[in-house]
Image (tube, rainbow, N blue to C red; front, side):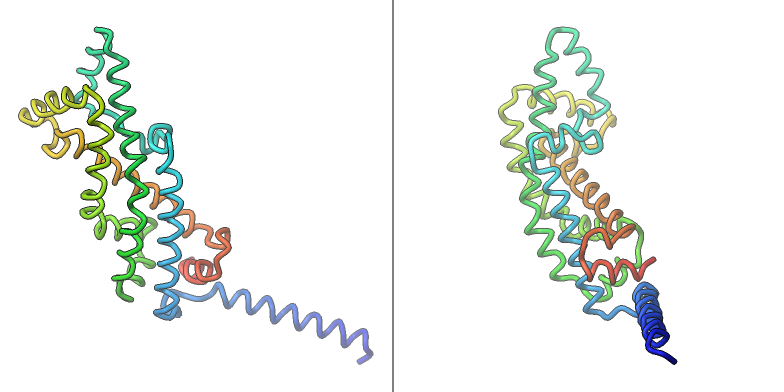
Length: 234
């Protein structure tokens, strides 16, 4: 074998080895992952998802300008809102809706520490179970773990934002009557609680949207651990 043939053979061998190594890396299954990798992958996903959701929602028009999470009046109060508009009170209705969404935008940044602490108590079984779950398993897990404490943190901020609007009291009066008639849930009959709940819904929704992206294309995030862990789920 002359030198040119040898060099060609060597390059082919290297290319074959690299191809096989690449295929092996993506041929991993969830069972092949170590406990450490599974947990690291989930922590990375949490950080990416939470950071992205908070950065999108915790700004002016983060809720108000996003139709997917925008907080509107409950459907049962829309008729009352339309009636108010016919009497020239449209600006007051709009002010109320704006204040609801501004309260949500102000509250969301408070979530980061709570979300981060939740993952610290996660077990290895939790991590692998979540990684092997559906497209929104991460966000569902954190909703279960953090919804109650986040509601406590969000409520005062939402209350402060809506307290400046006179229509907030009118909302509570109308919603209270609707609740008595069984037209809406009792927890939604108070504007502060209603907005707090919708804020949490929006937060977890945006985290789930980011999680779907990570699962579908982990390589795009430039993280080796995300690529390794979520690539194993393909």
